[in-house]
Image (cartoon, rainbow, N blue to C red):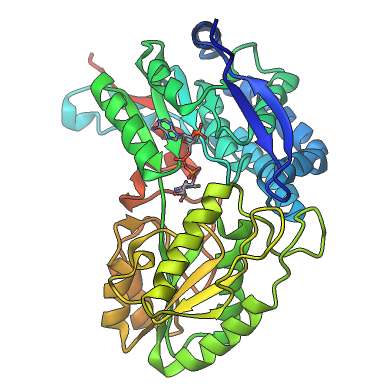
Length: 462
Ligand code: NAP
């Protein structure tokens, strides 16, 4: 008999194995899909008030567990303890957001009955059924909750295939919804590898899928769902521009730039990755940015004094290192960082690379670590052209007090979001998603809850 596949939690701060779990077999996976489908047949009939009560209970439990689950997240993927606790509390707030608003978001939408010769015409939003969520490790709670809270409030049920390096967090989320009183099967974690995803997507009881992760993973899920004619939402990578113009509040831009590049140890899809700075303020920005990046404390993510912990995986650090080494070998300069430290754990220092040219791999890639690419431009035309010179289109950031420049950035940057004079952030109340190869569909706000609904047209005659 073949040995069971294991899914393992490893501490990226020291490489120690924390826990191992047997992956679910194909039969166990099918049983969970069946349980989810059975749960949905009853759960879809529940009222918004009932679902809101369950969701609010789950939010209260999560708030109470915040410090405990934060320690698990930090141990599994290396984010600092403070940021992990903040993530847990943000999730609880996101759950309450949908508990309070789902009914209004999904209320019947009146149509123009007169123009279609009807007594009544409207759109009704109904749940689809079992939805598979394939999720990444970088915000191991938030990525899941921003899918699960609206999906469950809409009357869908969820199956989670979490990243293989965060099984403890994945199991916690299933348990959280169970403890809150959601009926058996409404939210289940599948402990499976990515090779087992196709069978789940092809099961007729699974009606739709959402994936947050890399482009190859998104392409694979979308291709299978295309073949099955199932709806997908894809939240993929990003290489967000952070543009600084002469009228910007430079100190604020520097402070936000440092956070935006290094939060979550540099592993955020909407991190500022390419700093595009006007020549008039380039030298001053570069000096201040370098001083603050170099002053960050890298170390044990459990330690409250740490700003930047390890990267989540050994491969992740190798990928970052390769991009930096290639750029330096081809003539770029490291204003700070640029060399991995000795010792255990997958640490990489805050780094700024200047003098990037087109032939360097770093120019087009998404750098998933605390490495900023710094560019000098001579004006707004060049800034916008460089901002858009990427296959990605997730978030973007521009710093300027000039209202004409603001209007141009808002109109001309090709991205799912433009933040002016503030950090690109995902808020429950604002839609989140990308264009180009950053994906399609939207999460959060009213847009997010409607993604996994049948917008049913209703026409009633006399
Ligand atoms: P990843 O390798 O694509 O993994 C993400 C998830 O997809 C994991 O659960 C993974 O499972 C699964 N997966 C991988 N290949 C698959 C396949 N062929 N078929 C089905 N599932 C597959 O992503 P990552 O490198 O860990 O995460 C970083 C990426 O996610 C970055 O590009 C980042 O920008 C992006 N991201 C985007 C957003 C957003 O909202 N747009 C948010 C966060 C992260 P296994 O772990 O078992 O391989």
